[in-house]
Amino acid sequence: MSFTEKANAFWAYANPRKFLATTERVLPFVWVLAGACLATGLIWGFFFTPDDYRQGATVKIIYLHVPSALMAINAWMMMLATSLVWLVRRHHVSALAARAAAPIGAVMTLIALITGAIWGQPMWGTWWEWDPRLTSFLILFLFYLGYIALWEAIEDPDTAADLTSVLCLVGSVFALLSRYAVNFWNQGLHQGASLSLDKEEHVADVFYLPLLVCIAGFVLLFIALVLYRTGTEIRVRRIRALMARERVAT
Amino acid sequence: MMPDLGKYGDTVLSAYGASVMLLVVLVALSVWRGRKVRAEMAQIEERMKRNG
Image 1 (cartoon, rainbow over the protein chains, first blue to last red):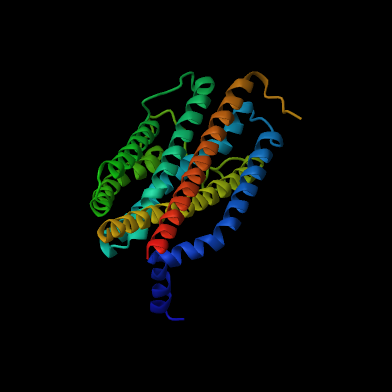
Image 2: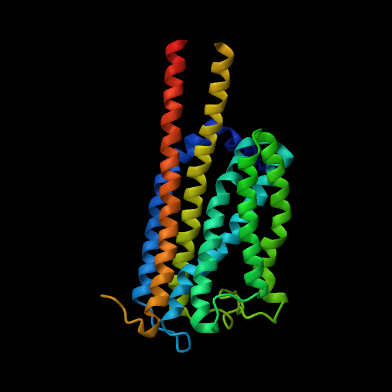
């Protein structure tokens, strides 16, 4: 299959019927895999890993904090990609996928903020600090809320998709800032990245392996939820179209 | 077989409790809304089929 044919095959999923038919088949496997990875990773991390010599048992919070923080940023990046597809190619499924992903990203950001605050209290002696990474994460959370509110506030779905796509482009600055804040601001309290390709930098293997399983679980849960919720948004759109047709007929 | 969390028991358990609760609420609300919308769509399609 040539590249053009492959690209055309991909765009076939912009057809709502094709998207729904495919996700119906794929979703049960993704749900099961997500549940299995989450259960394995969290049970492994919580019950079968040792305490850290400095952080004690609070190190177990890493299995929730790091995956949720990763997904908070990557959910926005996924929304950015689908928003760009909407703006350029006007595929409704992509705009609806961005809409479907926003509440998931907001919850992931909230989990990262809450677990960070709970961990920070005994380790840093404070629930909150106006540190670059913490602050950019809070702003990212507010962007998520604004994005969701904007979708709800505008009645015409195409106008809502246009405006939320622009908001998504602006918010991407803070999503990237959340990711890289620890690299270019060193005056903050937040430590460097827990995961790195540099073996010297990332956490010890005993914590790293269950953490990877938890990350896989969060990624799969995100995929399952986005596919499921996008299907719901497609059906809501179809309901609107059917009701409009009914009104015209009567 | 609960691991010994020492003096950080409350800290760790509250982080897990809050996170798991938020994830469960997110999944439950998504599934609940999905089912509701699916049922509504089936009802409208059925009505339209009946009315021609």
